[in-house]
Image (cartoon, rainbow, N blue to C red):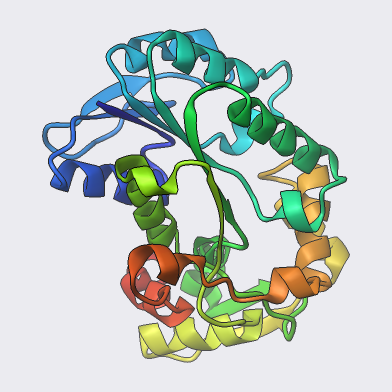
Length: 279
């Protein structure tokens, strides 16, 4: 049985669906009650309290660990989740980390994630680590303004990174959970091309079949908006990358294609599949 945390999110939902369609027994974990695919067991748990995962881990052989904001919660002990998994008899853990642990290793959040990676490596469990860069789904931050005013408001309009489709992250995660050949691997996951916020705006407009205007925000304006939904330090970290990506953060990684046998999906594909969110 495979446990998927963050099972109702942009990565967890398609991962849960893919595993269920592959005939796997799946337990979906989320903070709140939610619909899951037929045949999937659902458990409500808060990852900031690792002991609460015990009912979900009972009988599990593999765990997909996506912490999201739980890593930054006051008093959170994400390393304890690895211990709970080992105690429950879990054999394999696939951890969603971040490319930032390699490209910008000294920020507080990346230090914490690197420590979690090290805990997993030293746990005696089989493991794989996924390090995505920017997510295509971050464009959903713009959905309300596109619906209301046909405008995307973002900083650094002409600076791009190769954002990755969460569906591709989910597909890679499924492969790592199901295939022994990925044990002990750390993969960097990106999209197939560098794309700017202005380019993303054009792709959204094409998906909608209607004009969408790009409005450039200052860094201060962008931080104020982002800090309403994430810690201020994480907002600063994100803006540092978006405003001045390093060569490593601008590089298109071959890992998605190497694992899946196909190129990663471009942002335009993501926009076409999610056009309804912007209407």
